[in-house]
Length: 299
View (tube, rainbow, N blue to C red):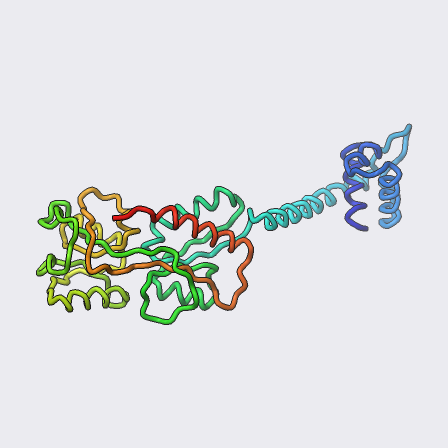
């Protein structure tokens, strides 16, 4: 048996005549007849009884049709899947990213991608930059997004978003009326910090030390959104990235420029030894365009 014979058999069962079957398959009537005859020869029993110019399926044909129908539907699903893979509407995507992007920015970017890739299967895991790098190196994810600078080796990547840190103040804070905050303004202030394991923490501490400014370091968190909530509750001030500042929905907080400028960029990473698929490349192109549109707000 071959696939074309089974398609002809199904077409005759559905069309009830060889003529209709031939039209369904876009072949000639003699060609359709030959396919049915060769199928009957291959399986060793008759599928149709010819009576008064019409074909009546035998009981054996009815049983066979159920299996053929299931099998051909499976083949059609495979063909449809192949088409979807070819036109980049189907594929799987494992994404790992830092919390600053994973809480709002990345879900919105993925949702926009799904509007034109409805059959895509996407998994998003929010991790620290170090964990994202480990996942990329271990090929446990397809695309990774980390915060820069980082204090450890990472595979090649590209800068996706150029950002910097803003000073987050309670809306009623004495400094909220200033457009620009400098280290000396924060002398003696309660300060919400990143943990020591975050590379930006060392950079921030070095800047305040260079300016001879002492702060009260009582609270630490690795999440910029959590920092913003602490600030809004009056627990202190903080330096947070522009992306998180744009995403924060609280009303009791003021974001102000901070100098000297501290960069907090975000990079896109791909597995160094793994060839990227066309589907993954389409997502990379999408995220580049999405990031460019989303980060045009300037403070």
